[in-house]
Image (cartoon, rainbow, N blue to C red; front, side):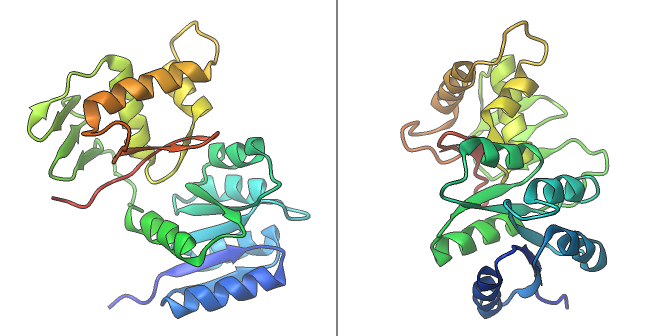
Length: 235
């Protein structure tokens, strides 16, 4: 029988480490803590945690560099902690370096716990060269066939809508920034980056994919940052 899931918290605030240790331990997680990025990276190598909660603003090896180094060797979920005064650009930088999610301090405990459960739930091992597929009993994506069906009916997606959907699904539960979506979907385009291209195509995709585009189930907006594909329990 496997033991409790292991969470590493990297933050230069002793008070924050204490609060998170008490909270996460209460909910059955094994908690490791690090007061700086250098110690955090050492603990990642030594203990191979299931998830990392990472503060961005730390002296010495900051959160961006920690995130970058973790991503060179592991695919474990990383949740960034950001202060309210941290700019959107800083948060986007962390996401583009490979973080899965972010949460703003001060945060509600139930929100953080929900983000952790979601990230751990969908954390998957490497695909071993097998084409990624998604199937929740309603929405089915087959990358081998380049086929998307919803309730058994084929979705008539344009090439860019299909590419946008697969980028979001493969990144889930990570937030995909506007710039990352643009770079991946419009890589062969002469267009310069324009967030409106992304927003327009997301709107088209939601109309085809969502029963109620105004209250989406799958494609959620992270204001000022990008979009997240929310995987659903199997029907």
